[in-house]
Image (cartoon, rainbow, N blue to C red; front, side, top):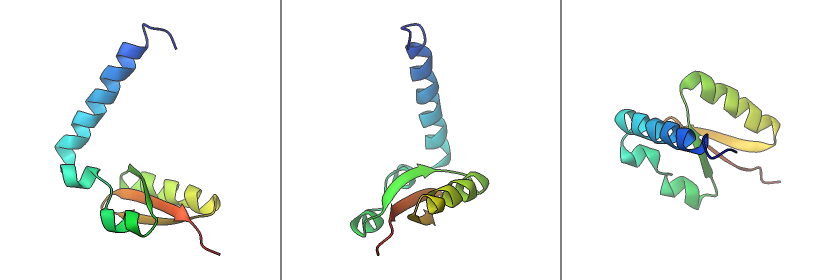
Length: 79
C-alpha cells in the first residue's frame, strides 16, 4: 500500500472509532468477560441486518454464534 494511502486509512479508522464511541459506551466496545471465559471470541459490532448476515456466514463456517448487545461472538462447535 502506498505511503499516500496509509494516512487516509488511518484517518478513516480513527473516524469510525470515534463514531462508535458516540453510539456505544466503552463497556459495550469491550468483549464480555463472562462470554470470553466460556470460550467465545468477540468478532465485531453490527446493526441487526448486518449481524444476521454475519451470523449466517459464521454458522456456515461451522461456528456457534451469539449476538449479544450488538456484538457478534463465535466459538468452535464442540463435538
